[in-house]
Length: 129
Image 1 (cartoon, rainbow, N blue to C red):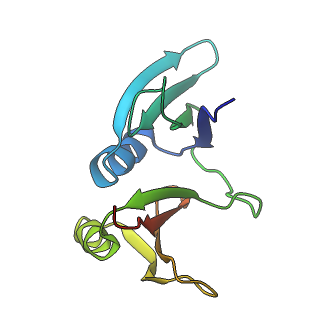
Image 2: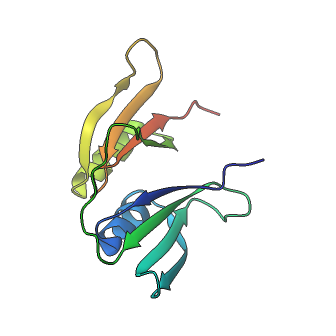
């Protein structure tokens, strides 16, 4: 078994694609409109779906606002230089909601950013190879 994707609903597909692809460096893998259901699915990720888990962005044409709720936590992305990544994201206007630093009660260096829909993305400093 393998995790295939995580789905999140987005308010504005173009804005979300810009965030995930331009700011976080993911690639748009595929996108399809479903006119009968009035929605579009876009899959983004860091590699092909055959060997990588990806994010499914679901845009419902008639819904332009969602409540995040308190059950969803966050998506996590590993980075090589968390301080440099946060600096670059901030320069692009990305909202940093937790500055980089060691996690509470641990030593792993993390930060959190927020996508245009309010979803939190945890950045985790990868250990040197």
